[in-house]
Length: 63
Image 1 (cartoon, rainbow, N blue to C red):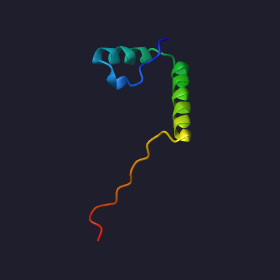
Image 2: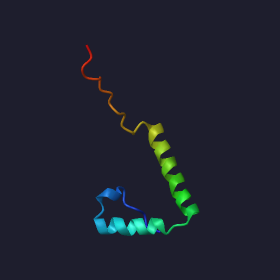
Image 3: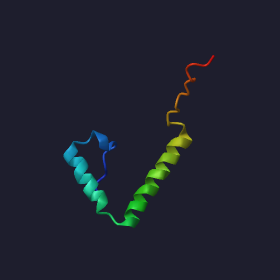
Image 4: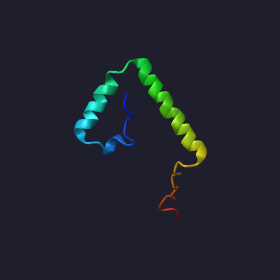
């Protein structure tokens, strides 16, 4: 299996459709493996502090 691009949104529309078909054709267990890898990567990014924190903006109209 080839490595997917870093950001699917940067792909041309035709390639996105191909990737969607390929992912749809995977078995449930293969999809779970991909989700587990994504979850692990997300947890690693969160633990490293690389994820941007959302800036909390004060509500307007406070008196």
